[in-house]
Amino acid sequence: EDKVVQSPLSLVVHEGDTVTLNCSYEVTNFRSLLWYKQEKKAPTFLFMLTSSGIEKKSGRLSSILDKKELFSILNITATQTGDSAVYLCAGGGATNKLIFGTGTLLAVQP
Amino acid sequence: NAGVTQTPKFQVLKTGQSMTLQCAQDMNHEYMSWYRQDPGMGLRLIHYSVGAGITDQGEVPNGYNVSRSTTEDFPLRLLSAAPSQTSVYFCASSYSNRQNGYTFGSGTRLTVV
Image (cartoon, rainbow over all chains, first blue to last red; front, side, top):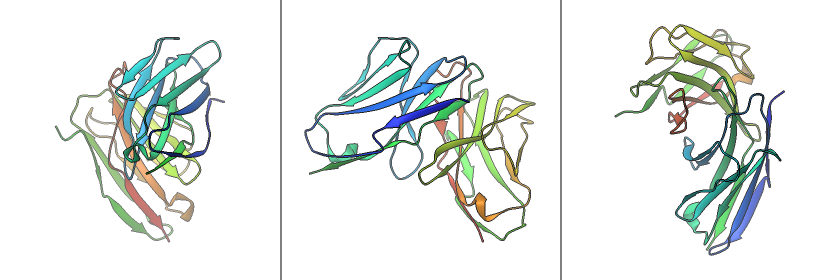
């Protein structure tokens, strides 16, 4: 059975800290690993990773995939209160369907 | 572009009633899917479609039906609502190559009493 596991479940940091969120996956015919940010409503797309060892960056956020060890990390540097959200990781197989983890709840305190 | 549009945003049903949650996208995406989100459970896939006329089951399909008669629309039908179906429902769509990720609708909060 396909599964995606995220850790930690929740995290509280102060503004300016750097955080690392973890995602491990077991997905049949794995094709891609996606990260989303969810605040009050619908998840918003952050990154899609398909190649091992290639870092994707967007401002203070970055992510990398290790296809040998079946995990990905999402880094956020110089955190801000606006980064407070649930971060979701999802694995995609050959059929396009995504399997999501339960998410990491990040709270950034001023 | 409207993106992915879900209606209604909120709904209260009595046990045993049926209803249809609507999802429409205007991005010409091949792939569409329905998820439910419950506290502590993350997003769980109900049904998905890789193109018009093609649907398949996800992780939690029981109690739900879907159809995909056009590329744009992917309605989710609750046949006989149960309290266990109280949840927030999200529709999502993407191109078949997933290159820009999946776009989610704003969600439908359903309560079954």
